[in-house]
Length: 367
View: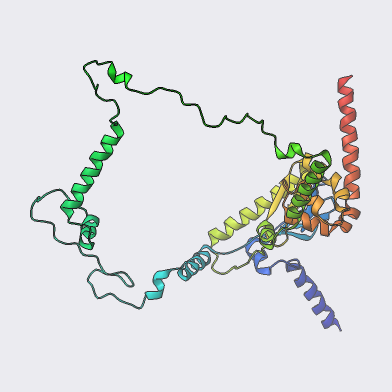
């Protein structure tokens, strides 16, 4: 019995040395752990669209950032050697020269899979006339006259073009009087066969519509914009942070481990600083994607969240905040609206109290 108790205690102690659920043990051994420097009561943090209630404790285990013990961000880990090998493999798939790698050219100086070495003809012995390009020579061989005839035709066309540019109207006087050069021109006005129509002012088609038709068009445009905003494609959602970060700890050098550790620690401290500045932060537990906005944006977003999430779908939320915040992430926030509405009440009360205190201080300064 005593032996079983000691074995259970040993297992409990060993379990404390392992990493948190969702964190790789190897990552903890390589990059270590980092505790929070303080608990932050400010800011608004969302992880995968779910609001995390303050106060916040931002810690790190290996390549994973945790907030209040929950996985909030995960970094991709890969050695430079493995990344280079993967890139070379991808490049080899699209290399057209690899398809003919087994064909060896018999010419001297040729490489595997290359085209035959081009050869040039001997130059003429002397300057026997105007220099003729290879294109002209081939055209002459196909037909259309000799090279000399083609060159003569080109010179003739060039001369005619020059004469046409100069013109030949009234260049010389027809008589002895030099002023006759100008008298021969006919300046007689010939009236048009039909009178020109009167100018009609242009009226935009939209101005010709009634007010009811204009309102209907405006509503149709708003509905179209909302439909486009809510219809986010799968590719856009993946680009906004749905891709899962891969972890490969093989072939990591000491320098790469130190660089990764410094990068992870800096990111943890940055999240803590942004929360202390009372900012809005979006994080994804699948990768290291993050979005941070100012305190003003945080207050406006949180205040409008309840009304916008009460709509039948996420179109209103995306239409209002899609230009500032990631649309795919806004859809996740809408999907977690019930849990967010319960947890965010304390934040709304704090924001209302701070706004009221700021207004009172401003009024005291004006008196």
